[in-house]
Length: 621
Image (tube, rainbow, N blue to C red; front, side):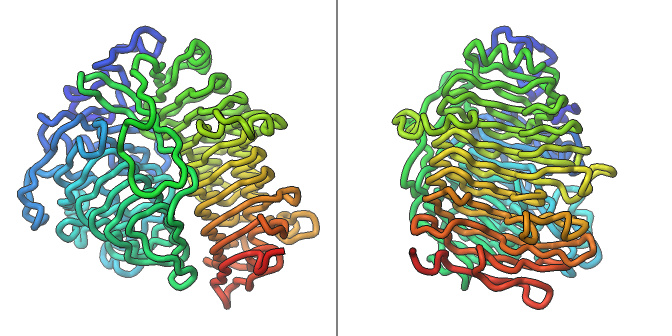
């Protein structure tokens, strides 16, 4: 892997590999490897910006991975905040693929960025970007967390040379034009936030959690978005499916006109663990507790546990699955530093409360057809910040939480209830970078599990030879067998059978985004028994209790023939199986979706592109 820092003197990494081989980890200078750069307030903005620029040119399916970390302090000058065009000495990074940026303070207020760490649209028509020419539909795999931004945004050097630069922004505006797998967490924006490209083309789905935006969030052409447990000044914009839970300043419930789904609180949530430096200069990882009926931000470190860095095995891409499993068996937690991990065997979690923390979108690829990660029937496991990329040998499942048939034993366990296993920012990919195959991406057998910002993607584009109906094969993105499983910010796209199969009771989903597979070659190749097509979101007939809010299912059948899906969602008709605020949309191509849920909801097709449904069943019974 290429180093992510252009200024090695400021990187925390050295060539020492002792941490990768299980020896003692320094509490004050841990070895995170060559793809992690740690900035210090004494570093010049020119050097910081050079490091961002060096990483920003990586392609969509590159194997490079980067993490940029800011030690506590203030970076850049605020002098030009009222006129960004003339500002000098500001931090200015237009970040790209496989890049995570985070502050190392205990709270977001401990790191202040005068400038902008931003994400911009990709110009397809530089001479006229207003003509649908700066899309962010493929702006994936980037993140910003645990810091404060005083927005003073400027175009970067390459962008500034364009006739119409993307990076220009009004005073006190930060742009974060992204689609899936690009979260904002624990971010304090002292101004406004724009989440779509400058010239107005589409982006497709995003996520904010436990953050404050003092001004207005403008969604513009952003097609759908989920905001959780945050404080915002106001929200401006809507396209198809905007969902808010526990957000102070959110728009009122109004689906479908405009399509805003607003819950006053989030039923249960558990934020991602994060790395920080304590008052004595030692690295630690904070693991938040789960909270119920949540509203607004919580940046306190009183409600959770703090783990010293020496209790972690710090893995590098060269670390073997054997060495990782040995460390886990000995009671260590796990940090996966940036890079691609080709796993000969599964990473096995057998201890409750184990933490697996990925940095820089660390990517796990099982090489022999096994799973990347499996957990026993334990509770409180935290898995955060990784990509799981299917290998060329078919895997039955990529990540398996618990074992089939054992979930009922933990349903009433008070420890399990208060200490749920949680997956934060865990992303799956079938194909795209290379030919990949897996029957199921994520299987949840345990009860009391939180799925927080999950994107499971069977690739619809990628490198040559990596995509095709019989090439990157995958049946299901998510299968839930456990009870009391909660999904918040769930995107599952292009799988070849039911994209989500929910078999457990008392499940909840808040925000669901799904595109059906683009490429069924014929109707006969895409039928569920006698039914045309497979439902995107299917709740088993045996389920007696299930609730979902804000679901969008879209079609774009492009292989040629007219492909029909009978129902985007299927579920048993029972009083405690409730769906709220659903939309189907015909994006392009051929064919149709006949109903939104079961036999209810109008069809979408080339002559009628959108259909909405406020609730189901229409009457209880």
